[in-house]
Image (tube, rainbow, N blue to C red; front, side, top):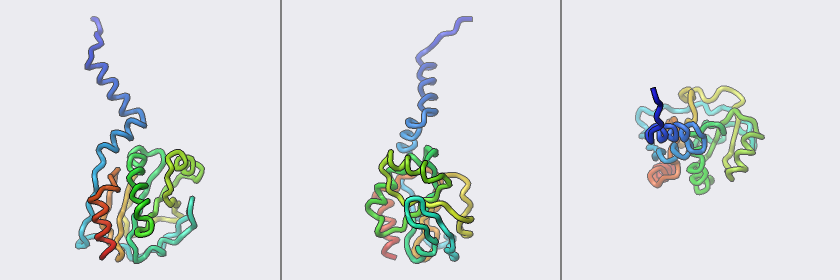
Length: 182
């Protein structure tokens, strides 16, 4: 029995390699990222107890209650996570334009040297925290990353998104602008 290497076998091997190779996997994920939509308040869960101590890795330590009454972009992520890596350029662009309008909170369980090296390599300037305790009781459990929540000024969870997204799209920005006006 002779084995033949066909063009389709070579193509299959290349595709498998590209999905296993982290930089190309991140590129594919970015290509498939869509703009998330923000839900209406009816039926949305609401955060009432904002008491959550956070240790700032590249910013001051805070209690989440400092953000009460504001629109909050809350993201759980890690430097080793390909979907997290894929969405961070979108988030950084969004952050650049909205850092004075929206409260940004990025939660990781990694140490500062790993995050700092990653941020320097990619020129990110996002405020990163570690949780000192379990997170907010009203939030659904975070079982996968990236996981992003958008809270409105009254504490309603207007978006709960698992996976990578295009956080800098015109559609998403319009929804955030609407939230800021509420």
